[in-house]
Length: 313
DNA sequence: AAGTATATCAACCGCGTAGTG
DNA sequence: GCACTACGCGGTTGATATACT
View 1 (tube, rainbow, N blue to C red):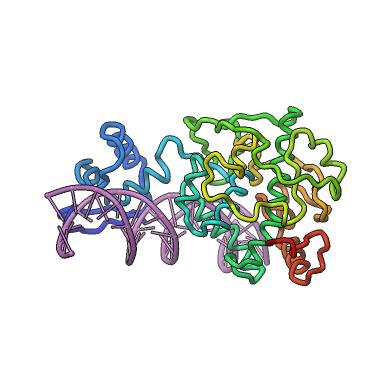
View 2: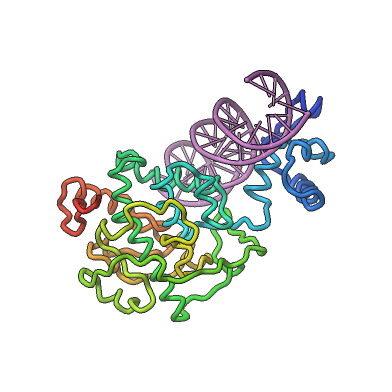
């Protein structure tokens, strides 16, 4: 692409570049911001010499790509859970949601929602914003993400898989993890602990019981809504005591199998997070299409006794 | 191996809003 | 209160990578 076009007004007769940024442009922008700081984007665009970009374009490039604390790589289960929860409360308020995911941009979250979540809804022929789909997410997807978080933590505690951010498995296109990204500091795991449900749990989960959050098995065990203000309040997967590093990234996780589902409902027996074959199993923390279809059908027909939707108030 | 379909995500666009004179 | 400018947000597009046939 990299087209240019003429401009008038605030950029005078300057030829404005569009399309992908080059290394030279990035360097110029970084240098300028290092000298003059963020903000005043139009002034930046005018005064930065050979950087023939609009202020808007400079701002976007900086905020979405060049800013030092941008975290790259796939979303962790914790982050996915946070997005699902916050979106259920706030809708498409991407910027607001991004404020609660350190190092993630609104653009990235928006893309995640459109490419992953909406895709699932579309294939199920339900509206992603419908109550039905939200319930399905809350009852099936979120518990699985919680379990992913728990499984990951267990493996880490056993020393089965240790890594740092710069050793993290890398995705096919965006494996970079900004070295300046500091590890998130986590609070207490007890901050999000649904009511205990002793039954309906597989033996495999019991080994996690001392360190992992108990997994909700009914809709009523999830918070009915997210808190109005998340700072310092109960629901915060990112404060769950679990690492955010990419070792837990389900897209790149190369460990298999994980523990059997700890929930009362059954999952497909070939459930793994191995990279080698994601065609019909859990992919990046999502349900496979078949699984989600089955579950949703059960939900719609009211046939799933383990999911008492009537309790969902 | 080549062609095609699909997924991903960086970048652009339009619009609303806040700030300023 | 009005006009103008700058900024930020959310929706959309299009290039590229990857998967599939």
